[in-house]
Length: 112
Image (cartoon, rainbow, N blue to C red):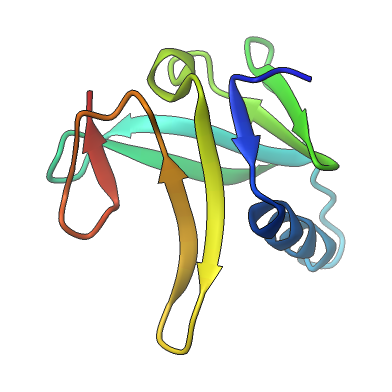
């Protein structure tokens, strides 16, 4: 197993549910993970359905989920764990990134 990025059981379960409930007629092979220059701390994570990997994507398989890591994101997320939480008021993914040196208050962006 490639250790560039890992998923908690909660994240894997949620991603599997997203894939199973994709719009009718659409088939996705996995989730593409990237990093964009955005947010108040400089960088933000991006997630999108992926019908197939892009030619330079790195495939990470963890807990039955395929993640396609954008080549430009690989250095920023090396060793990252993706989690998912849900409570009465909110839900979302949490990125436990050992490379991040700071985060914005809302947790949507980071800096390295």
